[in-house]
Amino acid sequence: MVLGSWMRMVGLSDREMAEKVGGMSVSGIRKLRYRQRGPSIRVAARIVELSAGKVTLADMQPIETRASTSSVAAEGVYP
Picture 1: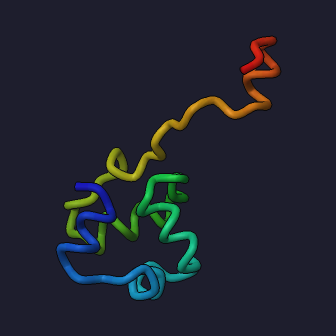
Picture 2 (picture 1 turned 120 degrees about the horizontal axis):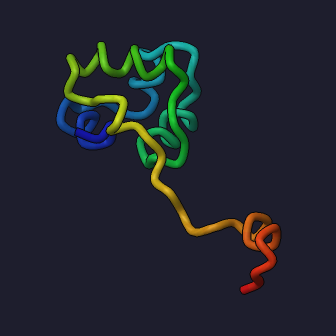
């Protein structure tokens, strides 16, 4: 189960989740929830613990987005 689904299921806001995880900002939780970034090992372990294993490490991996301009330029391909 992805983090955002679990948070909705248990009724946690980004702020409440940041407080429960500890050491994370609200925007950091939001980025995890939308899978814009992956968690540190400590944060991942805490989320797995808080969710009683419903949210796994695989569920927290960032979603690949289209290639950035810098990586495209590095490959010699231009949009």
